[in-house]
Amino acid sequence: MKKIIESNKKAFLVKVPRYLGEQIKNLKDKSIIGSLSIEDDLQIKFINSIFPNEYKLNIKPEKEKYAAFFTQDNVIVNECSEFMNITPVMNSEFFTFKKNYNAQKQTQRQVQELDHFAELKKGEKYAKLKEMEAFAKKKKQQLQNKKRDRLDKADVFDLIFKAFEVQTNWTVKDLSNACSQPLAYIQELINEVAVLDKSDHRNTYVLKDQYK
Image 1: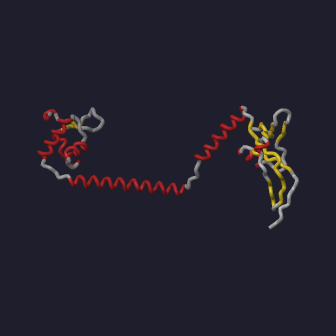
Image 2: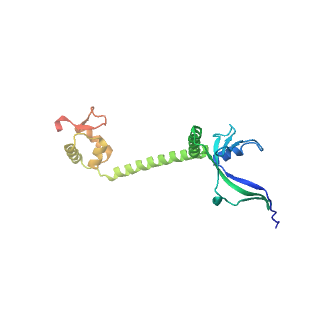
Image 3: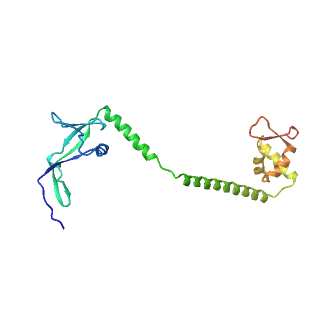
């Protein structure tokens, strides 16, 4: 194990907002990034390529300071003597930036890369599934119709007349369900006792005048 070599060099540890750190990291090495004003409050103004570029520098009180060291190859290269953080000046530039920054982050979370071929396969699978569902529904309806025993015409007409006593307009499908008879059988008989109501867009039937 290598021996740790101490150093008397002092350094300031400065905490910056993430978006600011991202912009600083993109600058070239040894670039001048801004200027520090120490007249009243400590203020930093970064170069124009950093936006927003006006910040305040806050020094932590003595009791809140952190002891921090930066080591490289077991050598203490700097000892932290001051801990500071940078906060943006709350001006119109900052609020405009923050609004756009949050909107961009939200958009990035919503964007999702899609595999075209995977989505295509999903679409084909969905289409086949819907086709199978429609086929199964049709077969189920056919089986239900077969299970319904056809009554004599007189008995069916009696059921139809009773249905029209309940309400004046019926669709063939609703009559089939009400009478518990196959749909095709009701379609064969309905025109003998009822007519299509042309004023009703639902394709309903009403009794002929002589049966009312």
